Length: 428
Image (cartoon, rainbow, N blue to C red; front, side):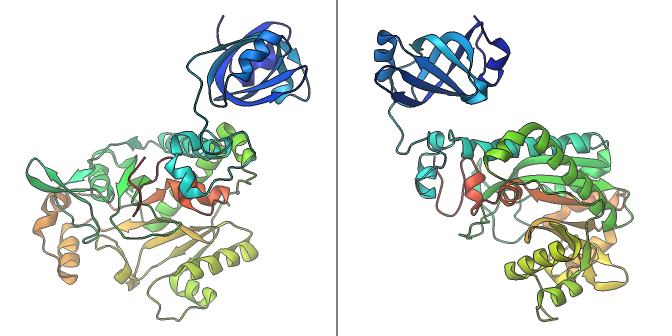
């Protein structure tokens, strides 16, 4: 008999059904026992009245893996409206050692460090698993939206020869006796691939050796990167980002609506046109000094409140960041060269996306490097492509974990990360 997932049992009322999963909870009453079995799709209630089966269930601690065969019986109070009666219960392994917290409770009561120390079992809890389901659906939506717009998925190296993009905040390693580094982003490579496919994206890990110990930073996270050619300016990039976010959220609703409900979250609507303010205006709205070079977290929160109150939007573009705060490859605003054709997207008052238009002419790169006192040689392999013709282009990057954390209202990005890597944690 083929195994059935709990979510599909309701289609077999009156027939025999076979489920398999983990012992989620046991309720041992005087004349009857209830066994709750958890699988990837949800929970199945098993009603045990036979004394021999009841004795067997009594000896099976929570998290023991079992197989149950029984009659599928309608019961409106049971999970999914059905339960298994007259069951046989067969362990598929030895009795489990219970984890250091109760997975059957609605919320995990263990502290976050304890959950992370025991991540392989903590992630089994429906609330922790729900966040990962949402992340998977978001990535599926990201890919589907861009595939439909003729983007090509690429896969670029995560080990690189030079630490040139963001200074010293890189992880070093030994590469067959030569120094190498974990890539901080696929930025250079995705730009080069615009010269091949015009429109590209990548889903992959990035590594930042920044000694941050905050609720919003990880040393390794998943970056959703996009780059597209033949743009007029950064506004074309912003339009693609808007559609990408809408596609991601639509797929979350379609694939992971149950997970969203489990976490009590509400999916935002992406406006047809996301409101945008220039950096100088953003400073004024946030009450920051006009010479402030960047937006602090408090400024971002103030802007998020303003966008919600003024435009009814959970999203806000801040454009025209000062060139002094943007990477050397950023295209300046032709009308205001001290400001960039770059942007950040704030989501509920938190920076979610950074993007913009890039330089595309080889002489402009040489001038930009000279202006910031950087030598050309470390960038030679990157710059060479621009000697051979590159179109006007731009792109953006979304931090997946930060997106999911903000979406579900998690207080710490580690709550939505399976096995986080940060300043203190390298295991499990």
